Every structure is written in structure tokens, then in C-alpha cells.
Length: 248
Image 1: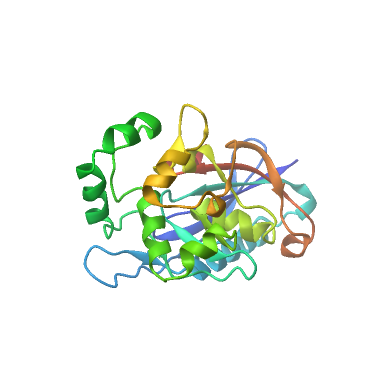
Image 2: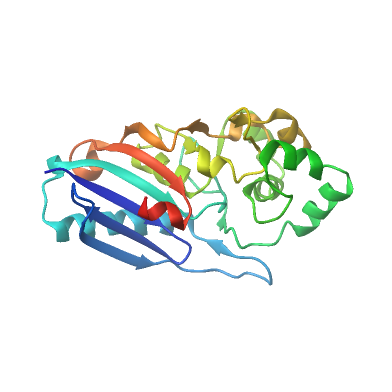
């Protein structure tokens, strides 16, 4: 019998559940995630804690399930959408805390974009209204946080991602910088008709394309985990954003 390890990285906690071939839960583990509120309207997470708490939950769930790693068919990832991270490709070092989806620090930027007449274009391309909820203006804010970051992003030295991307990057040892369509579609940067990042929207937000992850399907093998993490490579075979994706 083969098992699936489901990683469910949420806003307030990280969870891992081992399911059997019949879709029945065999074992699980959960760790709370620290919430940071540096000023009114700002909500942040520690990127290192996101990764370590999720990895710890995976180990605990597998231990409680008492199964051999060879019996694990795949890993699936469900994640809090729109939470935004920026890190160095070479070192993996996060460039600040993750900006959580609830964060409203880019409200003024969004208002300026609407006042400039951009909302109809964003709605037509992305299906979204211009709002701080989505990750595009959060990424723009992060790139403005230090004077040299946008230039470094243009040179390909930095990586942007939502939580699914951050977890996959670590699981593959930095080999894969990817996000799935369900996460990309909530970024204000993704043309839902063409299924790709939109250069015109990127130009409006002054975001270099080089900082963005590759886009993959929600279902299908993306890559395999580093052997050192679980003793042997495990396929990462599903990524989907938000709580309703966790059950799927």
C-alpha cells in the first residue's frame, strides 16, 4: 500500500497528514506559527519558522504513521495564498519577514494604481481587483525596502514566491523555483487567459520578470525532494493554494 504525505501550511499553523491509498488519515502533526504585528495593518511571518515548522510536522507525522519511506508515493502541498516572500537564490537567505495575505501596508499604492486608471486592465488580465490582499503589490513593497534589491532582482540574484514556492524550493534543495497556477492567479501578475506572467502588469508594478518562479500545473510531478531530507527522493506531485485545497 502506498501513502501520501500532505503538507498544509496555513496562516496560524503548519500541519502534515499521512493518508493511505483509500484517502483515510493515518497520522498527523501540527505546530503553531508565530504571528508578528510590527505596526497597525501589518502582519508578518518568519520564513525560517514556516519551513522548519513544516518540516518538523512532516517528520512527526511520518514517525507516528510508522511507515517506511519507500511506501510514500508522493508529497502534496496546500498553502496560505498571497503571503509573499523574497530571498537570495545563492544563499536561501530571506530578505525580511514574509508579508502575510492579511497585511494592508500597500493600500496607498493600490489606491494610486486605481487613480491612475489601471484597474480595468488588471481586472481584465487577472480577474482580480487591485487590492493589498494580493501578492503583487507586496512584492513591489519588498523590492523597495532596500535600495539595491530591484537591481539585484533584475540580475536574477533574488527569488520571489508565495509559501508553496518557498517550501518547494527548500524541499528540492533550491533546485526548483516554481509556483502552481492556483497561487500565481492570486498575484495580480498572472494573465489567466494565457496562463503566464504578464509583462505589461509587471511593468506597471516595476517588478523584474527574473525574480518570478516558473509556473507549473497544480497536479503532476514537479520534482523530487532532496534525498537527505527523508532518506530517499520523494516526488512532489501536487501544489494548490488555500484552505479548500487542503482536502483535495
